[in-house]
Length: 422
Image (tube, rainbow, N blue to C red; front, top):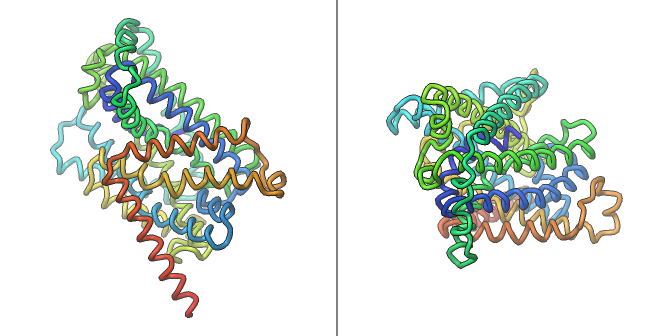
């Protein structure tokens, strides 16, 4: 849950409100929740069946066999080497942007803050997994506390007409409506990403056949309720046009209710939430790169384990280094679209199609420890909506993602060709 809730929802709420022309923005959060739940059922089946470090890296190999599975899993890790640092960088960039509500800083200072935050997170994770887990629990409590503070504050100062008065105006089912819903859903799904993080740590989870599905589904349902309540509470306090044009919409929300001093305190808590999310993200992705390298299907440096801490420290440090550079180079809006476009085909769509194919095998009953209800409807729905969101990103990100896939395939075949000659 701390992976899912970072600075993301506080940054994207304004955009989503504007894209959906007011209260209809709730539909983007609902679509994100339904897609996350359907896709979460795919992850639950895979995570309980193959509880190993690496998540999608392992799943794609198991689903598509030795030949194509190796290629798909390599492409996933190839993209992750770029995409994971982008995710971390997006959180760091969002942190530095939101910090401006408390401390006015220029663009160069923003870059310095985002870079320093990446270094701090790397330092916090450079310790054994038990200590990391305890830190994660404390961060989770802070995250839930902040969100509940916002929701309770909103509903105790709620204006029903302000929240729902213009709802019907934003829902007309025209082509413009669906374009807006697609653009808004790109941002809402960015805020939901992370429900599968437990799968990256599958090899370190007790009773994975039960705990992985529970972790995924409870997280999605809990966060979906929180996001929808949070967005509704905000609309009941701030006029939607004002909220759509605010860079610090959550801070403005608290300022409108309690005054500037409390808003400063609440903004500080939001920044702690951002740190907590980055902590969980980097933890999970460092294990993905490690799993691929340990399996001999990626560059061996990522497989090195610290002799005392027993963590993949090279994977962690390289991930942190890339994230540091990206946090200095890119803007938040660009990073969000690039993250989704890069992941949808190789990871989400491939897994959705793969789980449908797996169910057709005779050994499926023995392999699948958890079975999704109403199969194959959730998997088919997830594949279709992921496609809708993919084509709702800008064409430059679509072509960029296809270029990354093509380049990764070339690198894979050259690398494997050299191995065969050796």
